Length: 113
Image (cartoon, rainbow, N blue to C red; front, side, top):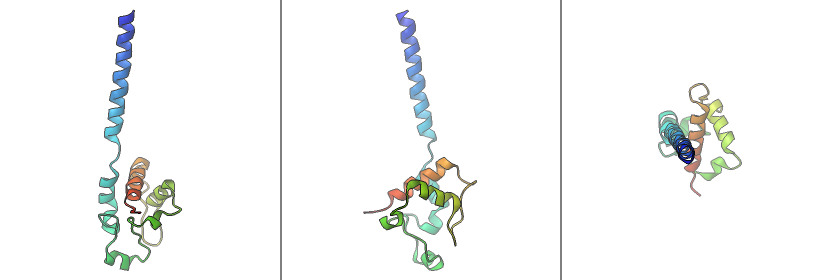
């Protein structure tokens, strides 16, 4: 009986470890998604080029903490999904919610105090 319970416990533990590993392996890479979908306008490091700022007057630098002042992570995700007038297109339907969250976390990490 003890061996059987030990085997069951081991099996459950192994399943949990493998499940957690699988979930971590499948977590979206916010930085890679940012570089693919956002960096053209917002710059590789979250600082848009002077040319982009000239074309889009309200284009913000993600390196500036003021960009996120009063803006929650959920609000950042909403901007990614829905866009913001007049120049940013929304990515709803092109990115999953998890991908938008990963990008939001990444861009918020760029803000330098």
